[in-house]
View 1 (cartoon, rainbow, N blue to C red):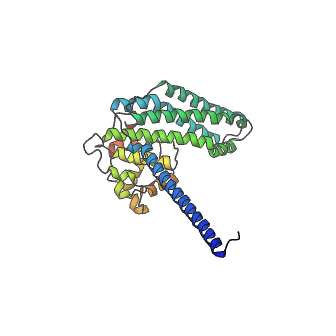
View 2 (view 1 turned 45 degrees about the horizontal axis):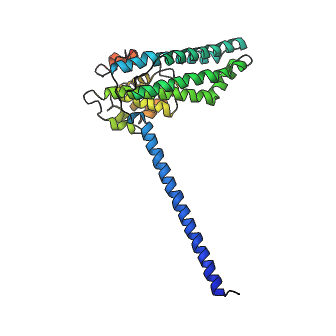
View 3 (view 1 turned 120 degrees about the vertical axis):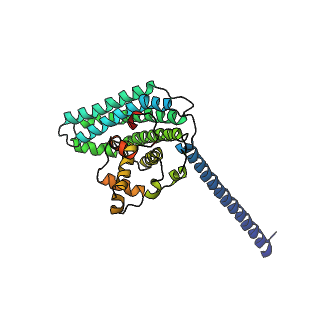
Length: 303
């Protein structure tokens, strides 16, 4: 039986109505999913934030990590920077090959030494830092192996450029920086037990900390802030966060902040990096003058 125009209209209206419902449902579902995913990512980021983790951190555990994990890593870092700097001017395949092999040999040695140690389960930040250093040294070893053949034929500057571009080596550095941040977060947890240890702790959450607020922080808080900055940059360097802290405080104390019109911690970091002003051992050199009343754990790099 032939349908009337009104019946066709009703049928089309019904189809259109059903399509609208389906679209509305799909939009609502996708919007809801996006919100859930965003909330989940936020919660996951908060859970993985070293500043949000708790645990037991005493002198013994901090010192244990230093000797069992940090020292082997520091030995590798020293060889890495010494050899990659030499690599820039190496003019023979034999020399470049030897330099790469030496770095890789140290990565293997440091991995083995770190692997021998264990961190207490009640100190999760140290457990995580230990595991990240192991991943870092293993990845350095594996990635450097890929360059050994090229090292025999490329001149030093070209090989150095290739190392700088390596995604695998950048990932190895990222693991090392993550371990560094977790170690300084553990030191901060220890610091929090001291009188007024948590004072101004909320400033550590600021993405662009002003130098005015920087001056309100204690030494261990400053070091933690810079360890996080290094991870986010990323900044893989041959000096420790406390060395950079000492130089920023020196900029302020000597009036260079006002002279250079520096407003934020990042401004100060940019100037110091641009002028290559930070050196390993700067903290030890300036410690007696700048930090006579600061609370520090008994770890060799603070002495």
